[in-house]
Image 1 (cartoon, protein in one colour):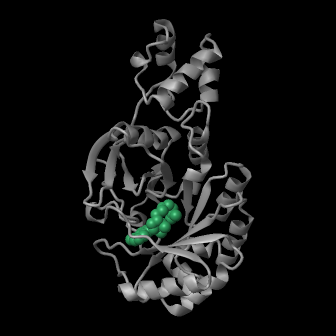
Image 2 (cartoon, rainbow, N blue to C red):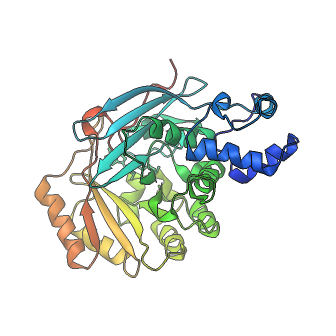
Image 3 (cartoon, helix red, strand yellow):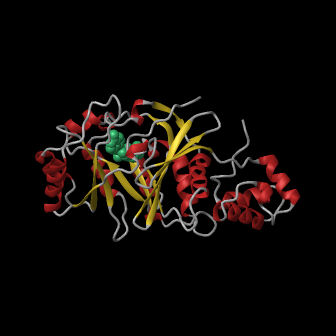
Length: 345
Ligand code: SAH
């Protein structure tokens, strides 16, 4: 087995490591500062650490970022970053600047095992989970190629894979992201974990006290339609899902996000909109309608705009905050549900 990767280790784990190597906890804090505050990954550049300590570290750990193979800019200002991992697998992350914020969309798995009918990533099947090093590595590598003055203000776990199916690495990454003293220092309110609706994972996440935003890929308000679109619904019905969602602890002004991909003639009827209103009654919800992004070989289409707006107006009339989210990066294969890279080459 290869040595553990420094990237993705918690500051407290770096302190423990320093002590194991016969140094003080302070040395561990210095490493964390280099890594997460300054974005320096190369041990040789950590200039306030002694040569001996760096040598001892180098024997125990590696410090490697995923290799940024390609950065493709979109006409809308977003960029798709394709990373080549150590085993040759590829994943992508998307940087999306928008009205004073810049959101980074991270992948958590190579491929995905949930096979949602409308999702291109879902056609790949699951290859493997990413490590926390590979998840945080995407962020550090993305940060390194930002323009001066640009920063990643929001992080969404909405790239390839199902975050809650890679639970340990997800939570480790969230802890590094939210560590205010020596980690990446993100407010949990700027982090969003999106899920197909893994009830046991939502319940576990609720108990972590991380306070991150939860997004549910809902896509239908009736079991009949949802089970056709999302096989996961056969294991956890809407009722079980909504029970877990209602129990997820929210801060005073926090909401649960619901993603709803608009599929022509499938889930875009006024009746389904009414059902959605009933389903979300009493939930502090924000609904994002995502017009379907096409991919070659898919059997779905995006509804005509008036139909999308009619669906939205039913939700709005019922008092639900509802936005139509036009995906970024559609021209570069970076939009929601379009992420797929050749696994090895
Ligand atoms: N597996 C997690 C994280 C991925 S988030 C989840 O499903 O929530 C990516 C979002 O894009 C999900 O809401 C997904 O359902 C949606 N999506 C997938 N394929 C799409 C497509 N072709 N067009 C628009 N949205 C799509």
